[in-house]
Image 1 (cartoon, rainbow, N blue to C red):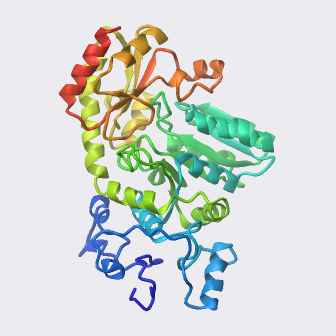
Image 2 (cartoon, one colour):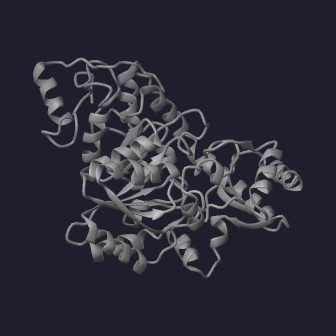
Image 3 (cartoon, rainbow, N blue to C red):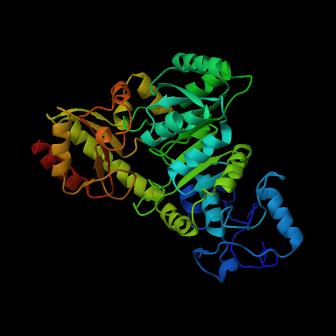
Length: 435
């Protein structure tokens, strides 16, 4: 696109873009595309990196252009605005970010949001209406469970869930039961489950939907935060939409909050209309910070994953540890979970579930003794974090449900960072000794 097509010099362009995405027959990998995809320095005074565009509104060349943009924004014409309108709808930093987010899962389109929960809320409000049913895996992140059960429930939207490790028949039975209660508007999955690290069989979920809900198949959406976008690509296994807390690996430095949804244009356009109304888009500065972080995403995730493997090997043999929920241990297992892992995942991630011998007292003693690992919620950052799900992130979940989902008092969730692995092992060793 030349300057005549972008008179304001914003650097933002609608597809198709003139980016180099291949050299000859070789398609460039995501790690390479993160360095410049979606941005032309010539449109921003030759800046190597996109500037931060701190403006609330954008100037139209003509009234006719403004009308056409608003036809897209309001849904009269599909596909959204063809240019920049107002920062509740779009902006240069957000559009470049969304182009790069879609690359990781080879998705047609992507949307960025002000937080992971705003992405989830916007998604649910897009597809669900009073009288509908949501079928989801369990457990989910506690705020997601609260949103579905307590908040959407106030508006006549029901739900039924299946265990994260359920097989196709069990999933199909839950879908059948939900369909008897109302229209199943969405199938929502979180894999691995938070905080138990249990995998959901995405392909089995999609097969069950095809069998039971063939007349009006709802979208299958998956929260891919724990493994995505490097170690798991749900769209390749039949899911329609991938949901992310970009706060985690994508941001990766524990200094921002954001979310995303990626998938086919037909679904993304519907979610975009809802986002335009609610105003849940990410802000320009956060989008700019995410562009910085995406450049090192593969490096950070690879290092954290390698560290987690070392740490889990140590923890699994310790006498004060009951068991370690680490996906890497599934690689050689002849089990349902092992089969899912080999088919669905390209890596084990860096978040683990540590079950200590004892209960809350022992878990708190371990957490309070940590030196390198920080006692904080979240995951996917450069630093190692540890928390107590039953007393922290999942405190609002009813006790009976926590027990049924395996969120016990002796469970500690650990997100491994990029520190020296031997230093981390020394830290965990002395913390275990403090129990």
